[in-house]
Length: 280
Image (cartoon, rainbow, N blue to C red; front, side):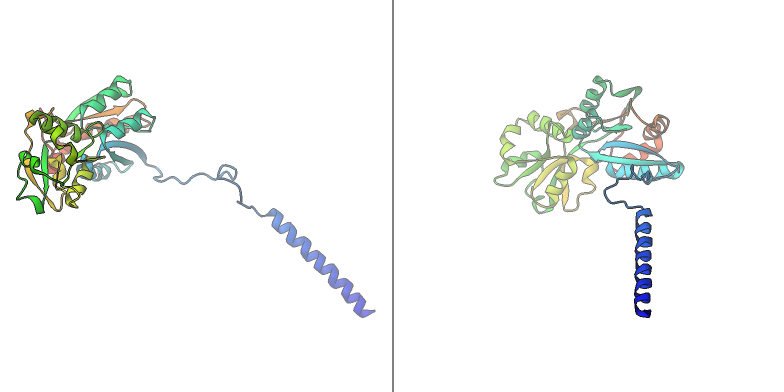
């Protein structure tokens, strides 16, 4: 009798424990198969309490803008600047396709003109802020062989690099200069086209190209290359960088303030430090 009694009690206790366990599981929250919206979870804020502005800028401005960002954010701790660097042509395309950009800093007028023609620029907020020059960069192992543009005609299987003229302003200026000398067509078989001016430097530094064309400001970061010649200004259109605020800027007041800082004398000194030139 006792054995049967204890078996019965044990069975009841086991059933009771199973019921409690099942209830506990049903009351717990599972995230399997659910997204943040279903769980009413807010996405984490990257910079809580700060105003973000996105600046799309020609990649040749990278080093100078990094300094400017540091100075500006120290003076404006409530602002966080997000840079998007690339060729002016690709950045323009992104803006046309709806990329959320507050300010555009182009390396040429062409891309800015196109955005203005499409009504994407805020009226009264476009200005030229800095200039540059075009240089012939040569890998150090070839600096005795290539001292000027004329020496490029002596290339055999060696390659020279330049930006793609349709999307990279430095490539456009290069094509204009080579055409003015009447040698562009003669050099086409030796040309490697790059997606931006910094890639030109990479090609030359790594000796994938023995020479290339870049801005004077970019030549500063070259490690295994030297400037052989500064290209004559009259051989190409003036190299002028325009800045503009986008009409759909999400943070207009902050965008205007940073835009004005880009045009300030303090910022101009920083640009000149990195090899950019003054404009009239």
